[in-house]
Length: 73
Length: 103
Image (tube, rainbow over the protein chains, first blue to last red):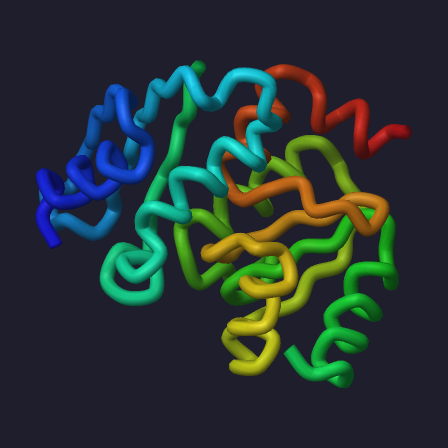
């Protein structure tokens, strides 16, 4: 799973979102995603993160065990 | 999830006002995100209990389903799921976590 694939997965699940992926160690494991999505409006931060996690359901079970997340409306 | 496991998880969460599911222990965290949350709680002087999910595979998997949250650590206050590492750090920065802990 590449950084590009993670970005595409999130954007496919949250259409219209802006996704920035940071891979500070360049290892594809300790990844941080910054997701800006209008659909987050009115949702709690927990709900916003759940929405992102839902797009990466299978990935989170496997290799991406350390996904940092920052969400913005 | 079977009833026994759910009861066990609920029992843990209700055993203390602030409860943390983590990898490792507060003195010896086994993952960076678990370490991050214990650092935040320590800096706030929070009195909390924790459970090392690495010691129990059923809790490690069950807690993800229980909270509808795919990752560990998970912090609970007054029985309510608060969030994982990023949310805890953000809430501490904004002062919201201090309010919840003090309330």
